Length: 381
Ligand SMILES: Cc1cc2nc3c(=O)[nH]c(=O)nc-3n(C[C@H](O)[C@H](O)[C@H](O)COP(=O)(O)OP(=O)(O)OC[C@H]3O[C@@H](n4cnc5c(N)ncnc54)[C@H](O)[C@@H]3O)c2cc1C
Image (cartoon, rainbow, N blue to C red):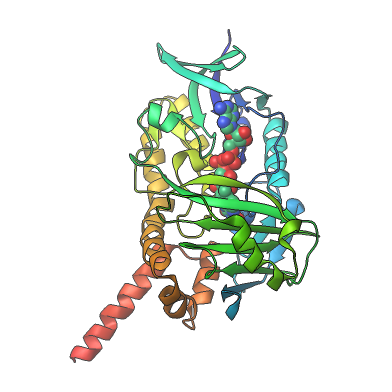
């Protein structure tokens, strides 16, 4: 059996991003994907335009809508609108289009794909990984990237990722018309979902509707009840939504994302933002960074995989540590959070800047701390 350089478990956004970057540097890489082709996924499809910097090809052809305004509401009232005027706008994509586009880019760069390859076993023998599918097919590789999403069993098997994975309960669906949702406007509703929020994102001729609840809820989300309250304001009837529930693994503390010859990316690495469920940007960033580290590692630089964990901590995890704190306070006291947070004159702009990737939660937290220190000093003098 030929031993390939890198096997990637999962051909979603994170796996295809890693595959493209490895294949374009002539590495022998294969995606192992359990489905036949990218399916319609439970995802809002909102992504910062800043991800363009990760790829040499243009992503705009698969962008359905460029968001210029973000509208926030509390139980459909008390609305606040923020203009997105920065250099990095917020895009809405159909996930199936993004995933198949990235997969095609990887395949065109020389990556192989084994579809209907449902990985059920991963073992390491004499420094070579043996990956086995449910139907008995096997692949051998020098390194593996775990990119199989929120339900991945492998972080636990290999003692990677957070010691206690944390999950948000979510629902996402699509409506085949635009309703009252204004063009180029994304809507965030904070009062109707316990410990979370609902959203409506415009697509070309459709709308992505969803909701997520982020604090230790033992039960799943009352989707129908929330849709009944949320959708009439947007000109829709709840019966129009076709969608699915999903448990989404979210960021839960700094942790090791690599072992010897193995890296976690995307949701399998628990990178998703625990406040706003932004998981696409970290999926694409981690795919990019994982590929970079593995390329050096294959060339003999043995410490490069540890560098991957460090880079993801500084480029993403440090912001998520603040995102987690904000999420815990905001969703525990959402009414106060909405009044003091979202309705504060500068707040909608800041949230918009987070969505567009212009600012991190860490930048915002530092600003607030600086302001509090300054206020404290001025009140003393
Ligand atoms: C309701 C909802 C709404 C969201 N909205 C947004 C949003 O608006 N913006 C945003 O940035 N993020 C959003 N997210 C998060 C985002 O969808 C995820 O972070 C992103 O999909 C992570 O990509 P991934 O490639 O790591 O995993 P996935 O997209 O889950 O891909 C994993 C791949 O692995 C394959 N796979 C799984 N098991 C196996 C196996 N055993 N063998 C082989 N292959 C396997 C799967 O078939 C799949 O193709 C949302 C998530 C949810 C649930």
